[in-house]
Amino acid sequence: MNSSLHSALPRLGALTLALLLAACNNDTGSTTLPGGDDDHDHDHEETAGRLVFTQAAGSNSRVYVYDLEQQATIADFALTYPATALHTSPGGRYAVIMQRDNDQVQILDGGIWLHEDHVDTGTPGLSALTLLGVKPTHYRGNDGLGTVFFDGDAATGSQFQLFSDSSLENDDVIASHTLEQAHHGIAEPRGEWVLSSNVSDGASAADGIALYHLHGDHFHAEGTLATACPGLHGGASNTTHSVFGCEDGALVAELHGDHFHDHKVTAPERLATILGSPDLTDFAALSYPGYNLYRIAPDATEAEQVTWRENTAADAKPVAYGLDPHGEHLVLLDDAGTLHVIDTAEWHHHGQITVLDQPPADGAPAPALAFSGDGHEVFVSDPRAQAIHRVELESLTVTTEVADLGFAPLGLAWTGAAGDHDDHGEGEEEEGEHDHEH
Image (cartoon, rainbow, N blue to C red; front, side, top):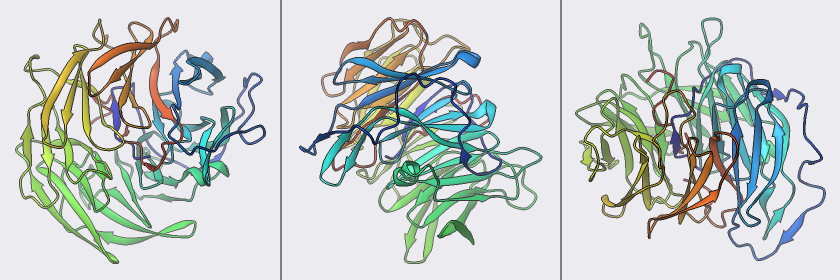
């Protein structure tokens, strides 16, 4: 599942050692890990799936699993530390639980996965695997592979860890790599390659892309892209290109055999967020700090601005955003609680609807988005109302899916089997207005 979901969750972060087995979970209730008693759905259709969200309560923090078919919370588990962000794994089975402030990432098995020609359904459970590293911040998913980039600190270099749903099933990652210099960065998986942010000699922040080729359980460094990308932040891929945000536009890379071609698509302001989909030729980009929307055509030389603020404040800011799994709808939730939908077929404003009665409060958990497996709906967490809403994207109708949680939900991820579409929208990486520096 390709993460293109972003939300303004409290802090995310980056690096240190590589993976290791998880710290003990002191409360798993009576729930067991999937694998024992499975129910087989041999129709091989897309499932309603399950939503995963968390409660941030210090040492009493928990993660919850809500089954959309049963319309009920079916499991909850104690977390070692409060979550800072949630993402869907590249194949959709797992939730990746970032705990940036405490230098680790926990993995939750949602309990629904594709098995040959059918869908298996089991009980959710926390994995025995915990990814360890200083400040895990950016998650990226592409073409069945996922990465977590650890920013690191003065004592450690940055690091990225590569995994798939298959490796997570075996409580392992595919490979990891430590970089010389700590920095706020990104690692974009692309088949046998990882395109990682790079800090050039004399620079203090990421300003380009380094290439790493997978060899078994490790990577070989294969140089850097020729095109500079000062202020690099954010990235995404489709089937042919990978794109990264820069101070002066976007860096576009295309794999040709055993090497990459790269060039710059210019923009009049810094692009700090990139969204892409395997089913979409073009990319979406958000500027920072202006939060203007741009369309990035990979073969273009200039970015095209797209209007997303219609019938809303001129200074409206998106607090969460993402592309649906098929790349047909770009969704932006603004800071007044209005959801805007952009039709990517023509890159026009499809419509908008108020989802949150009260806008997000400063310092509180930010709203988050999660798309259904078929991409027809988006779920929106509402921390102020302690609820989760469902929005049908074509008709723009809103219903409350989960009410009266009793706490402000932090993060939101959809897990399940999405049929023929293995890449589920981030984005998200999937965050909107980061607490960490742009």
